Length: 340
Image (tube, rainbow, N blue to C red):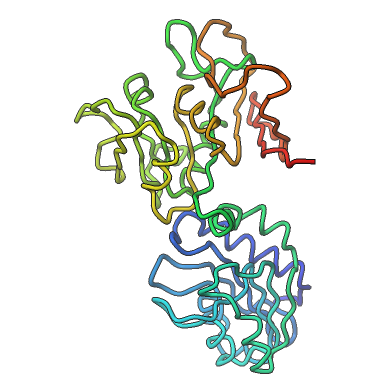
């Protein structure tokens, strides 16, 4: 028997469950759910399964069994109220006899929204907004962005020396950043829907663009590998091997690239300075992850080229939302500065 826990702690568990399935639920959002029995003890925990399979609430209910009756469901996203490839989660919660539902973020998708209202009509108590900021900035960040803007969330990731160089003048770049930084990149790839580079990066570095463990083993979920540009990529390039699927998009227009990626929500841009500059000029970067190594390279190989800024007053202004040590390196996470 476990000890009773509060709603905040239950939401912590639900967030953790959502983070564990992130990357494997496309095109559905990564949701976590916890079922507390009538005494407040954890009876079931679940995360969204791959498309066509159970949503988080149903997974958690299956774990709880009869203990769900009279209990509380704690969910990161408002339970869905529509019939898709699976049935409405509100019906599953009602059938299980749950007496209260607590969720963090309202579902902005008009097809699935209305779950809270439906639950109330069924006589189930509903509380909303618990830990909404944490969930919105955490496991649902990219999915909510897609719902709000209609396009994927783009994270520009780069590694560089502390003076902003992505390679030495002779082109050598392996490795500027530390083993810890590279492991973190692989972890993030495993959560993403796609990893994006230009043909220049393929020719210069011949990257695999896979997600691997520290032991160099492929993880179960691999992001779509996307190569952008007009040049022909050699058939023996590593990015074309069988470790994951690869899409080649023949354009230099960032908007066309995102349109070609369809319903995908979470894109990591790992391209070189030219492609990064194009996305920044187009205003299509939503987050920056900068892995900076404590070394100086000087020279003329910057992490990014022309971003459309000709004078200081026109600088692209960003703000830090996280600063983290990665072994000897520093990871800077930045988001666009909101207008005052």
